[in-house]
Image (cartoon, rainbow, N blue to C red; front, side, top):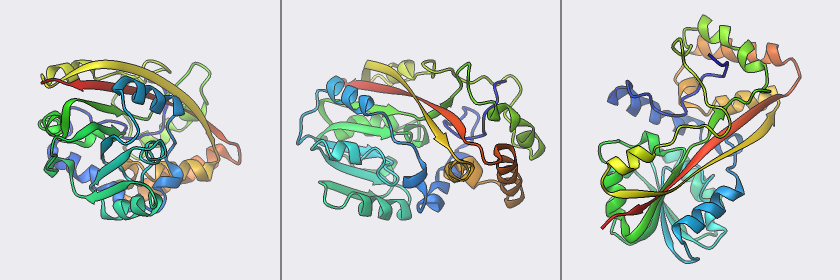
Length: 275
């Protein structure tokens, strides 16, 4: 197993519906630090998205789970009108403040209940699609889109290059100590090798995947910045206080004033709505 910090970058197939619901409700507790701590996505990702989906300024977009607007601002600045559906009330309030002055409407609610009117050029989700009920998410997106419209989603996950920071191996015994280690044999993607959901898209029968592209980038964090980042992940928010305190104290000790290099990886999926 390649060492990493424990996170919830996607939902494991064995996760029960009650557990998924509990975990996705945790993010609202991090509304005050989410925008500051979470990474920005590469500018090239937005350029590729716009080109693949054939978007034009003035097109109306629907964002699923905008949080504080990390992926909303870059598209709003490019001239798109956006409706955002956000589950957390505190996150929705933060998004409204961050997006003030742009053609953006933030709706507090869950995407599963959103009554799309078939007028959107694009439905998209940034590190949020995996939280939506898999039984209905494609149908909800299809209903919200105009004919010929597109669905796009992408994630930001930890990838480990050959020369990655050794910190991520050094921290693993702490996860084992607090009972939060990954199962034996868990493997982690290298840059450019993040698993994609092309087959899942095609299996919906509602969309055809037209573009799947990989991205990776590196961010250097201080110990305090990295702990703040980890404090926005559902698994860490949901920990018992003693687990989180132990983990964060060991991170401070292991880093001991030195920075940590973390590689991020993501896969952009763009799919066309079928008739």
